[in-house]
Amino acid sequence: AQTVTQSQPEMSVQEAETVTLSCTYDTSESDYYLFWYKQPPSRQMILVIRQEAYKQQNATENRFSVNFQKAAKSFSLKISDSQLGDAAMYFCAYRSGISNFGNEKLTFGTGTRLTIIP
Amino acid sequence: ETGVTQTPRHLVMGMTNKKSLKCEQHLGHNAMYWYKQSAKKPLELMFVYNFKEQTENNSVPSRFSPECPNSSHLFLHLHTLQPEDSALYLCASSQVFVQGYGYTFGSGTRLTVV
Image (cartoon, rainbow over all chains, first blue to last red; front, side):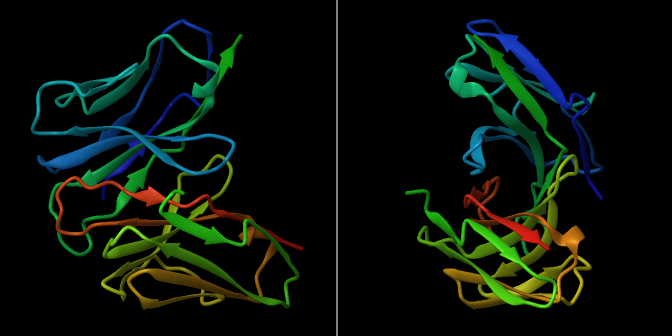
């Protein structure tokens, strides 16, 4: 079974600065997908960024980028130019690359609470 | 409009009550999920429905009873719950057979068992 570990329960960053959230995972699969989700106080989980394991290039979405190290099974999220609206819980998640019944579910980490200091 | 709507947003119930949580998705997805979110724990997958058929029950106690009448609606029927069942219950939907598809989540129901 796959596991996802987020070792930082809480992080804080000064507004406009850069912060990196860590995530490691364990799997025996070679084809899979990794996600970062954001959960603000409104509680709805919002997809921030997605990475395909077969792609060497790190995914980027505006101020959000990842550092994907497949051999190390590491998938960190970098937030540049932090804004007050970035304050939220951030969850790392894993999905198998095999798309059939039973393999489509996401496995989540415990989350990192990010605080933005004005 | 999120695409996945959960009601009610908050629910307080006694241990002898019976209540239901509702989830509705308007995205044309073919899979729906119930997750339990407790403080400082990973999200726990409870049930998976694909094409309105239950394909996974993650050892959930029988006091939680899911129902999926069609691929757009998902219910979680609750009865004789325990205080430790208090949590945020999240519904999500996705597309099976589409590689790398993520989930779309609802805003959850905050359940308090007293």
